[in-house]
Image 1: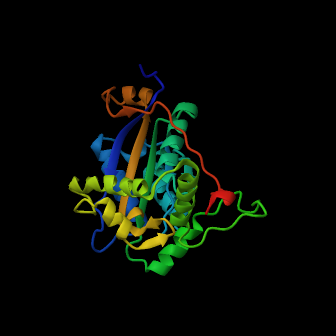
Image 2 (image 1 turned 90 degrees about the horizontal axis):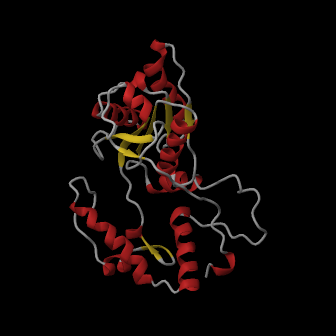
Image 3 (image 1 turned 90 degrees about the vertical axis):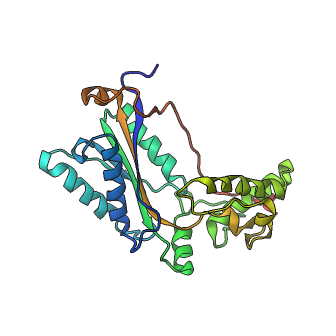
Length: 268
C-alpha cells in the first residue's frame, strides 16, 4: 500500500516526432508540458517544481527557458518555482524521474514536472558529435588515473564499446549476443510512432557500418526532434485536487550509477 506521501507518476506528454518546421527546444518542452498537464486536467500554476533536461541543439538556453516556463506559470500567483537543471551523463530521463520523486517525498513538493526537448536532426554530423562528446565530461575529469586512455569520438558509442569489450573478455559475452539486443529492440517497429519501420536481424546489425571496434551504427540511438514531459505528484496533492488515487503508478524506488569508463587493462 502506498503511503499518504507516496510519489506517483500521473501524467505524460509527448510531441510529434520530427515536425516540420522543427520547433525550438524550449517550444517543444512547453508543448510536451501542456500535453501532460491536459492529460490529468491540471494547470501550470499547480506545479511547484521543475526539472529541465539539457538540450544539445541549444546548450545555453536552458536557464532562460526554465525561467520562461516559471514566469508564465507562477508569477501571477506569487509563488516561487525551484528549478533544477540536470546535467548527469546520458541517464537524464532516469535522473529526472528520481529527482522529481525526491522533491515530492523529501521536500514536500505537490507536483514536479520533468521536461525535455531537443531538435538535433537538423545539426550536421560534425556539430552533433562535437556537442554530444562535450556532454561526457564530469566532476572526475580532472582526477583521472595516470594510465587512463581518453575515449575517442564519438565518445558515447566508444564508451559503450569499451564496456562491451570488457564484458566479452571477462565473461565470454559474444558479438552476436550484443547484436541481438539491437535486433530485439527493433521489435518496437510495431509501435505507430516508431522511427524504425521494420525489425532488423542480428545479421543486419553485424553488417552495418562500425562506429567503434565492436559497435555498429545500428546499435546507436537515432537522432530525432521532439519533446516529452513527466508529472510526479504527491498522494496528498492528488487527494486535495480530487484526482483518482489510483491514477498513474507509484514510484516505489530507483537507483543509478555513473562514472568514468576505465577498465584500462581490459579494454582490448
